[in-house]
Image 1 (tube, helix red, strand yellow):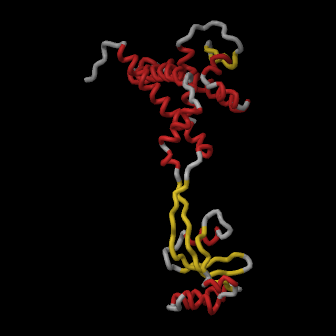
Image 2 (image 1 turned 60 degrees about the horizontal axis):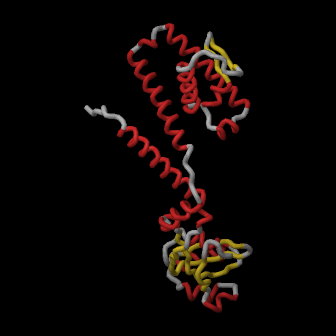
Image 3 (image 1 turned 120 degrees about the vertical axis):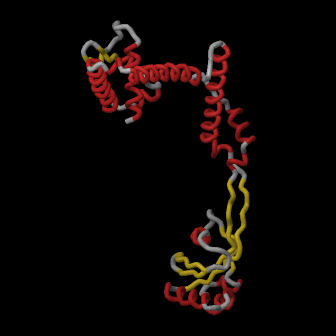
Length: 266
């Protein structure tokens, strides 16, 4: 809704500042005020206009008609002479013109592949992620009841090593039930997901068809992973564009201020 309002305000201000001359295809008219296709299109970026569906365009046109009707009626009520209203109209007009000037500068911004990669190189730490692995020891059981029974005995003080030898039904018990380091992307990712919820030496329960497992986390290990430029290309492009846009804005303000001798703050 806010987007509609901004575009419609821009349209009304545009028509208020132009002569009533032939402008091509007319889309709508309120009294003597006409909405022309070229004026309508000029309030959108090219890509934005092309994405508008016929239904959305009709919605904008209908909103322009309604807003124009309200504006005309407000004039008849004398609101256009109200001091506060005049100040707001003046501010809105300045904002539309200022945004048009800024948009003109921003449209000339280009980002090269070298600039993207250079940003990535200088800010690589921002894109680096840490991989967490867990060293897990487990006991394999045939059903949930057996698993819960073993879990109860562990909580009552039985050593995990004893429980592995007494109850585990898999060959891994010959190695003490030690799985080694388990990662998020490995075949035992179910254990990794559950391990995230546990502290070291806390017990957990996992079902991985066809077995139930009681397990514990012996330790966790954090390994920094090198970031891949291609994985972050679009994110980097957005960041570089934002930086360039801010730079263009600041340079534009600075240049205009240097040509203006009368600027005062009270």
